Length: 457
Ligand code: UD1
Ligand code: CA
Image 1 (cartoon, rainbow, N blue to C red):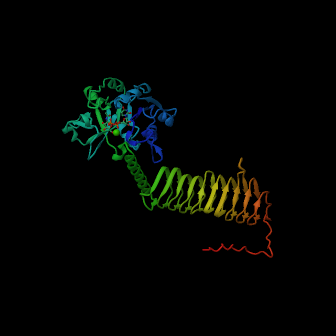
Image 2: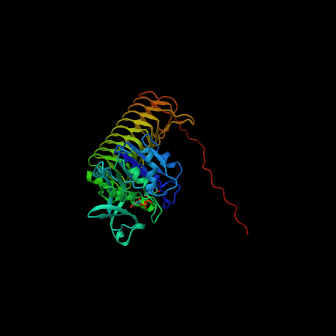
Image 3: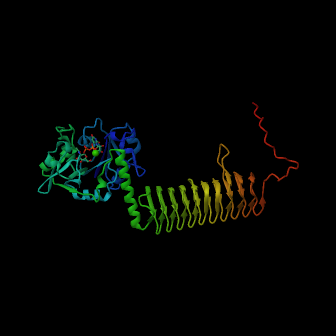
């Protein structure tokens, strides 16, 4: 099939310099949601009709499988689809989607396409309590005979509650001639795509319809308020899906998933957690309140405590992270690793059973198994120009407040005395210490506070 995505409308009510369809919902542009769903249907041709915002839309969406058609000026939905014609294959049915209607499910579109077959026109419709503003579906003897826009409708037609979502499938070979016959002789002086329905009926082409499972699948975004409402609707539906899978959510209204979150069995997620990109949680994982996880893999039985920030990281089984820990890109923890409060780990491998429990920076390091990193330890990885690696071998014990000036190696089973500034490799199995000898200054007296001169009258 062909897919045409209409995205030329200006979205004035967003009050933004960014074209409406590029505003994010669940961390992804509205148009990207539509594009991804369209792609899941494997269309032969895919065309986006854009208008406002210069080249911002094509620049943001550029891909080998997408054609772009500029609609300038915007003379209505029919006129918009006309601009896409050069990019389409006339011998295929055409699915028309809106770039500002992000949440239509693939199954719903499948159903619509099935109802159209390869010779019918099919419209996705919904029945609303308040149909104001929408095109009304006019039926005779149960069959759709035309769509009437709000502004052109009689009072009787305005009472119709079944409305056009705008999403439809046009049978092969028909789109071009029907569009060419559109006129703008209507209340809005626009070329209405919806006029092709009456045309189909007059030519004896069957018109059918399909309905989505939920009304929100067809809701469009015209304002920040509607965007925020749709975001909540979407997040709620994702939370419901997690609950149905058996995930425990402290509050389904206080979790945001901007991407995909895959959970094993018996996962518990406390309030105010944000998941971005691709996140995978193993069995029996618990995530404390106020955590952000972005592109993270967490193995079984891990506990992430409150206020942690993890990005592009991996956490091995039975590890403990936080509270207040930060795993930056390239942090890879083995099993039963402990990363405690105010510890930052970046681009480092920390092998099984190792611990950094308090106030440390571990950057560009390879740390073996059963290593203890004391409080306040810093890998000094940056000389102001280049980054260097630190290696800490198995069973090493790095005392508190050490600076490991990279590149440097801490040998297997060695101890580094507290407060050491390590500038050369520490041999295995030895105590290495660099510390100014402790001295006591005899005859020292504590300075006394100077007396302020007394005020004189
Ligand atoms: C349209 C339908 C109406 C339907 C409603 C659903 C027509 C004539 N009317 O209403 O029956 O109930 O959608 O929301 O089709 N667009 C362009 N170029 C244009 C005009 C619009 O690309 O010249 C795009 C918009 O960006 C938007 C979509 O088409 O994504 C719908 O436009 P909008 O103005 O919101 O819909 P209406 O015409 O009011
Ligand atoms: Ca609209």
